[in-house]
Length: 129
Image 1 (spheres, helix red, strand yellow):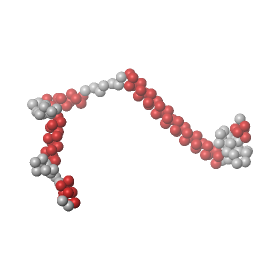
Image 2: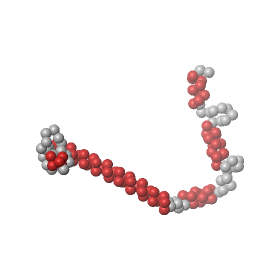
Image 3: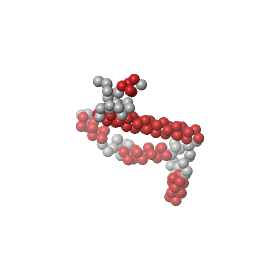
């Protein structure tokens, strides 16, 4: 078998003559999955109205509320996430203030006193204190 025949076999619309088209194979797999191994579709003998009522009941079923331990854990996780985001924003803001202070010749710590030490980005009062 050459490469073209192999690719034709792999990507053809049918797997084998005895299996039929992919749709038939998928339909058979679906029917087997919903039959729970009993061989019959459990929904076969239900009318359309019964099926629609069942679907509506499933959609309108109330979601189960998380228990107290789960809710406490979710709150703890949310608080930790919020705290992390808050700290990240604070660090970015502080770095911006430091950059602005140094660009204007001010101390990077107090950001108000002019730099008075040669080669340092900290003033003598912040360095000594």
